Structure formats: structure tokens, C-alpha cells
Length: 338
Ligand code: MRU
Image 1 (cartoon, protein in one colour):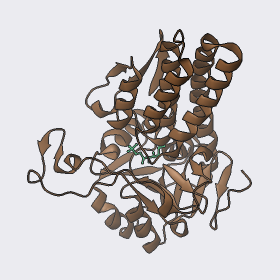
Image 2: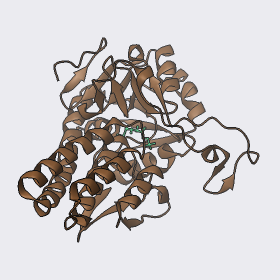
Image 3: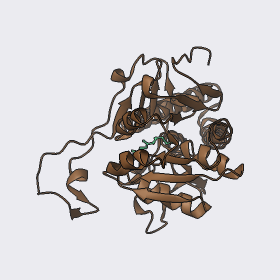
């Protein structure tokens, strides 16, 4: 399954808002449409948001390559993409990396070459992400035992990345190594990434999975069905505090209460060394309408006040390990050697 690809001058995305009902591929023909796709969660998950922005800049460079104001036009598009969603640091990491390449190449070799390099870099970042997830998966699989029940929240799978996944990459690697694992997928209110996406991709791979409402995680733990929790991350502070999908913090507290190890799986590009602790991480608040209705069907009184942060922060002290492509980090977290 490919979450994003480039063909005949344009990026094409698998529209994740349509899953699991339909597999719809959408051509992105303007940077505005890429911004919309990121905001509406047609493409989502921290690594994939970064890769989508890289393809968005490759498109911008291609569309503006004959414009005398090339650098200004592409820089304006970079600003638009950067304003799409605030929490996943991979977005800003990818935009910075691409813009350095585009502006340096433009200055030394012109706009055509800058557009060519922008696309080559987006393709390279996609391939790199796949390799990172495989590597991270191998490290993580070492923590999983035969017979484990593993709870995950949201979707940190192939759909959230260029492929294979981070948290689900760990689970896939354990499964491929012959360990019998059973995944318990939180449905992940309000947008149901767990129910719609995690269950969909695990079923396709033949990995045993059970769906539960978010409020059922505690009873599963109390019944002894969960031996590990593995989730992804949108931004990790220098002290290890981690922002991930809303509800992750509650799962971490529950895991602590039941003595279950709670792991984060993420590439090192998700670590933001400039941010010292979790409370400095910008948290996205989304439209209240997402809480009042699902896919247009009302689920609450019209106009009700609603609280709708997209992410929460899990304190480092609740995290048993942070699994990256460079190895597993343990509390107290120190990423200064990276
Ligand atoms: O709002 P989303 O669906 O983009 O949120 C995604 C998550 O919170 C993921 O767990 C995180 O980005 C890690 S994806 C490998």
C-alpha cells in the first residue's frame, strides 16, 4: 500500500478520510490542495505529514520554475505548508531540509535544477523513512515476547509513514520474526484512526487485531490481556516528554497503574531538541464539529461546546522506552549524542 507517490509531475495521495470504506487516490495539483489534504487528515501521521510537505515543495518548485520570483514563490508555499498543522515536528524538519536544498541549488544552478533536486529529495526522504521504520522495527521487536497482547492508540502504521510504520512497524517486525502477537487497537475518538486505519492495515497483513473503544483499555489491562503498549509520537521534547494523539496520556497512566511497559516508537526526526519539556509543545486544537458529529451524522446536541485537542503530552516518567532507528532510549532521556 502506497500512502503517497509522484507521477507525471504531480503527487498522488491515498485519501485516508475515505478508509476503510473506499480506497481513493487523489491527484494533488496545487500546493493549496496539499495544505488542505494535511489539514483535513487525508494524509496524516507525523512522518507522512513531513513527506507530504516535501512533495508539496517539489510541486511548488516545478510549477514556479519559469517564474522570475522563483525563490519568493516557493518560500511563500513553504510558509503555507508550515501553517497547516502545528504539532508534528516532522513537518518543520522536512520543510527546513527541502528549503535549504531548493534555495542553495537555485542560487548555484538555477530553478530547473532546483525543481529537479526538490523532487529527488522528496523521493529520497520517502525511501529513507521506509528504511528507518524497518530499523526501528527491529530494535522494537526485541522488546516484544511471544504471546504478547499489545495495545496501540491511533494509527502509527504504514498509513502514517512512507510504509511499514513506527509503532505498527515494531509489531510487524515481531510478527515477521515469528512471535505470536495480538494487537488491541483503541478506536481513537474523535476521528477513529485506530478503528478505521490501524484495524484496516493489520487485517490486510493478517496480524491478529481486536478493536475496542478508548474507554475499554483499563479493563483489558486489568484482565491481564495487555503485556505492552506501543504508540507513535508527533513531537518528543529533549527530556523525553512526548506529544501523541489525544488519549495517549490516559493510556500511559493506565499502563503505569497496571505495571505494563509503555513504549514510544518514532524516528529521531520526531525529537525536537529545541523544546526542553512537554508543556512547550504546541498542541493543535481542531474544529468542535469533529466532536459533535461523525461524517455528517450528529452525535451530540447541535452547537454544544466541545473540547477538542488533537494531541496530549505523556510525561517522560511514564515512558519505559523510546524506540528509534538509533536504538532504544531509556528514562532519564538524553538525546544529546544524536
Ligand atoms: O492526527 P493524526 O492522525 O495525524 O495523529 C497521528 C498520531 O498521533 C500518530 O500516533 C503519530 O503521528 C505517529 S505516526 C507514525
